[in-house]
Image 1 (tube, rainbow over the protein chains, first blue to last red):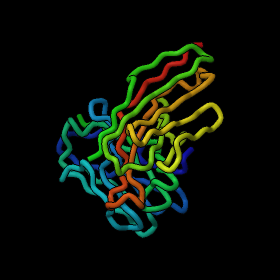
Image 2: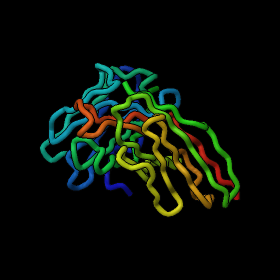
Image 3: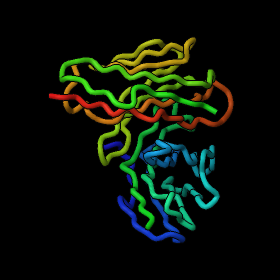
Length: 115
Length: 117
């Protein structure tokens, strides 16, 4: 158990809908990262927040957005969902802004299925 | 941006044998290289990492080597056991002292390791 929690575990929705994925980082970690995992694209970095502020953006679609709240939990919002958005979405956390001194620790993921 | 290539994509070994997974990276500014193990239905688990100021790191049956000149790093698992069966991912990122502000991990495509009893 990494200490990172994600809800829900599974999400099934229809095209065009909007969903929110939630992540709570390990106690003491200030950085939260979101990743998308699919069979064809592998693990892709989406976005990073550090202590409430956006720090880095990866291959995140404009239909997707995220935020980190004062209690450090984070939410990833996915809107106008398409079939191709079906994937596993992981949240990871690290102590510092780099994730390179203490590593990034991953949650169990949310499996999103868009029908 | 960074590109990480990982080989092989699948690896099957007998219990007790060694397994080696290799990765190459493209960004010479990368200086942090973690390895993750992902079991079915779970998130990636950090198993070992190495920074560019060292060439090798060992933790029990797991070791990682890094060749910065050639831009490749490898995971070595000795005395493999059936519970080592999983998908293994290598990754690379820049650290605080390598310039820039993007510390995202770039992952390889993964290696499915099967340890046969």
